[in-house]
Length: 267
Ligand code: DCM
Ligand code: DCM
Ligand code: DCM
Ligand code: ZN
Ligand code: ZN
Image 1 (cartoon, rainbow, N blue to C red):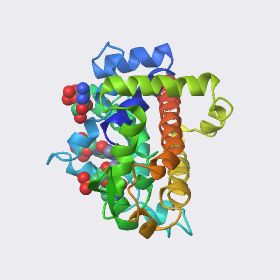
Image 2 (cartoon, rainbow, N blue to C red):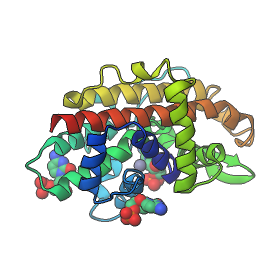
Image 3 (cartoon, protein in one colour):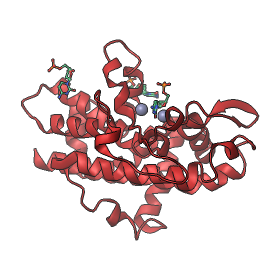
Image 4 (cartoon, protein in one colour):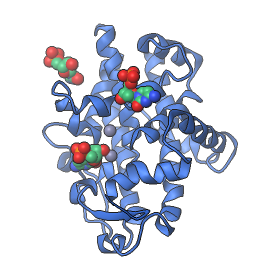
């Protein structure tokens, strides 16, 4: 996701964490405002473009070598490369946040990475190899040339939320929070977090990646790549994608809250 999607995931999580998690994370992150998660949610995307942070570039995705739209699926052994992927990164940084012998600055980095990667793993094209996760699929959005990955990272979320700022994300997250507490997601929320295990981060993250990847076949390119290039994606394509984007942001925000709660409870 672009920054807006990461802020929204973080604000949804902020609305569900326990008071112990809130206190622990505010101290770790050195931020006692209500924006303590959202303010660091996009940090990993600036870090990966620095020379010191280049190693973390593959941690933002897993390249599922499947064949959408006819066949979707993620395999850890096949798809998580030797330099790591989002699934191994979630497992590693979860272990590091649980390791109290690490310095506070190392645990702060681990927290910032987790806040970011639990968001990215919900973006279907971050769990797909085809055309570099859609980066090499040229499309048109509102009359401008762009690529399919960017449409999912940024254009559709900004269209749904009505802007790109942290304030817009907070309002979007409030709507999604209400859907989780008493609306259309109420009956599914318990299932979203079933089997969640911070001691087996790889297993939980692979489940999340598989769900996300399945949307590539059903929603991102149900009629293949060529069909995406025959229309401007700002119209009926965005209308069809909107429930999936809302679901993926809400779900990963809720999972992030429970993930951080489980870590803090285990410390
Ligand atoms: N960030 C942002 N917009 C804000 C606040 C933060 O884009 N209003 C992003 C920029 C960095 C990360 O969050 O990637 C951390 O920001 P900072 O270095 O300002 O703490
Ligand atoms: N590192 C990490 N995960 C590990 C080991 C190290 O993210 N399992 C990070 C911590 C440091 C950097 O890599 O930022 C170098 O660590 P070290 O000096 O411990 O090799
Ligand atoms: N990306 C991805 N899968 C890849 C390569 C990149 O999901 N195999 C993501 C990471 C960024 C976006 O695509 O969100 C653009 O990547 P870059 O800036 O490396 O071109
Ligand atoms: Zn992306
Ligand atoms: Zn990212």
